[in-house]
Amino acid sequence: MWKPKFHIAPPHGLLNDPNGLIYWNKEYHLFYQWNPNGCEHKTKHWAHLKSKDLINWETLPIALSPTDWFDKNGCYSGSAIEKDGEIYLFYTGNVKNNDIRESYQCLATSKDGINFEKKGPVIHDRDIPKEYTRHFRDPKIFIENGIYKMVIGAQRVDLTGTVVVFSSKDLINWCFDKEVINGDFGFMCECPDFITDKDNSALLFSPQGIEADGDLYNNRYQSGYIIRDLEEINQNNFIELDRGFEFYAPQTFIDEFNKNVLIGWMGMPEELEHPSIENENWVHSLTLPRTLEIKNNKILQTPHPNLKKLRKDEITLENITVNEILNLSDFNISGDCYELIIDLKNLNTDFKIDLRIGENEKTTFSYDYKNKKATLDRNISGAGYDGSRSCSLEVLEKIHIFMDNSSVEIFLNDGEEVFTGNIYPNKNSLGIEIMTKMLFTIPMIKFFKI
Ligand code: FRU
Image 1 (cartoon, rainbow, N blue to C red):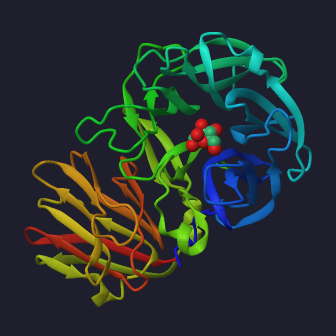
Image 2: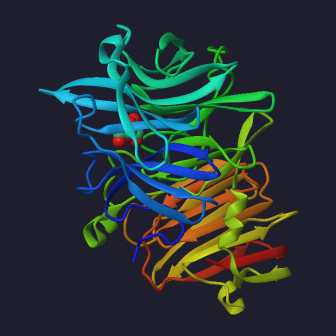
């Protein structure tokens, strides 16, 4: 009953990071960290799916299994790139002997996009510069001025987190370049990534061990970015990608429209109190694909345009006045799998929307007009984790919600902020209500069943 309808989730077992995202031969290939043997963080494989449209996915055989000396304790995260018509996957081979960790950056290639041949390590454990521990993983490859670059998440020997870069001319021989982070980012940085959008660029990564600071960094670990190129090492202004709860280790790729698109893991390391484990023997899913754009020193994230394909049974309400409370069920707007868009242009009062309302439960998104603060509250959502998360937001002009059985993603103002999280309400908690402090006329509400 908790399985998502339109998000990628494992058939059973544990899913974590999205890996190897690539648009290749007119198809999207997506891999994810998968433990097929149980709902713990163990025996990581690369599960494999492909799609023509990012919406309808076909499951393919497991691409990588932890069966070789250089990856025997897990085929950890990594990325994909095309070379000479083949898919090249780079991943971290995690090895533990008597509790001593070794880390190998490995290559596997495929001509047909189904069968992958492991080629072994391209950066050996012994090649890790002496300044770093064996927490050295998650290679993400991209090309810059004809040279291949690989960013890797690393830990310095003084147990602080950083990101390093290697370069290569042929994807086989790699040379250590430099460290590209200079700020204080906890004890480890996982899953780095790098994007360029017109004249702007951003370094993305998932630091572990940043202290909470007001509404910032409230989750166990963070995922975010710094707007900068690889050289601007002293630019440390870190911005969180998501303001909700479960969001970690995202990865980007370039889609059919030549845009950067991001998919994240809707989960958090070390947090496994999800009711789907006990009842249904699976845990975690991926976020929806989000198109990225860098504007005014910020990454904007909007739902990928192909998601419109999911829409069914449109209901549109125009110029509808809220007199304290508006019960959307009166207009046939309710459910557990849907897309809901609310235009709030000229909002001049406090706004609140309750989702998945049932007996004694609801999930609330609210906007405090005076204090300019947006909040997602899941304290009485149902089973699973509770809590609330907030962020400041100058104005609220639009809310775009995707509800999918046990998750919710809320995009604000065409991608200015996103709140993502899991909720586990009763199956028949389906109500939706809007509340405003003062009389307010909502220009437009659009609802689609999915
Ligand atoms: C992030 C992460 C990565 C690692 C993978 C192992 O969630 O810890 O650093 O490669 O998961 O599954």
